[in-house]
Image (spheres, rainbow, N blue to C red):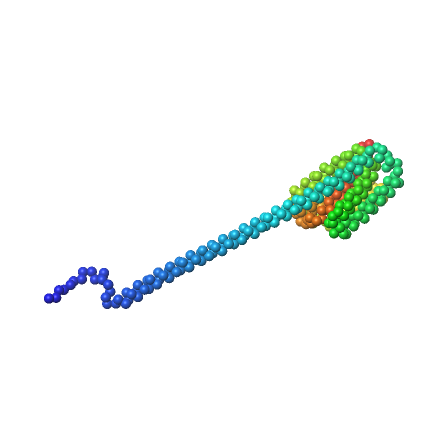
Length: 298
């Protein structure tokens, strides 16, 4: 006896007629899901790789910045040592020179110089020629200015020559004029040095202009002395003082090395001589101005 089986929900039964189609659908769905997983894993690997490269680049940049900072700190410390060395030598030079100037203001020594003008003039000419000769040797033979102890020997000889010249010239003026000139020279030098170290203006490009200006002023001064033009001579002295002040700014910036060009750390002798000569020229010019003002008052 056969029983009739009635199917209430035929939709939930497996596909008996086409089982292969069902298997293909399951395979395609599994393959799609595996492809999506592979794509996701590939994207994750790419992101990790990119992050690793970025981290590596940042790490390399940090190492380069650290090396640059170390190098800059070393260069800064070396430049500071160079500046201290230059101004230490310069201080000794100025102490020797101005000590001679004040020594020749003692009445006995001053009268001896004034009473023997011919001998004093010969000593002045000889010291000036010797100074020029020694300075020319150092300027032409830069290796000699870097060789110890010969560079210090030349520097000491140049300082003595300049000290003798300044002393003989200043002995022709009164103690009051010389003392005021020394004080004004020190104040002007300190002020110009502080300005040179703090300003953002670069004066290193003015070298040729300063050289031409100084040559023209020298010619005007020579003509004013030759033809005894007092007004032209006073204008020349005033303009020469300004020019020497700018020269001092220029040479100071070369020593500090803050802007533009800079002296090499081995050129400490030559750099000291440049500053020293600027200060001596400034002293002579201020001495003339103060002497002219004091003579007009009297």
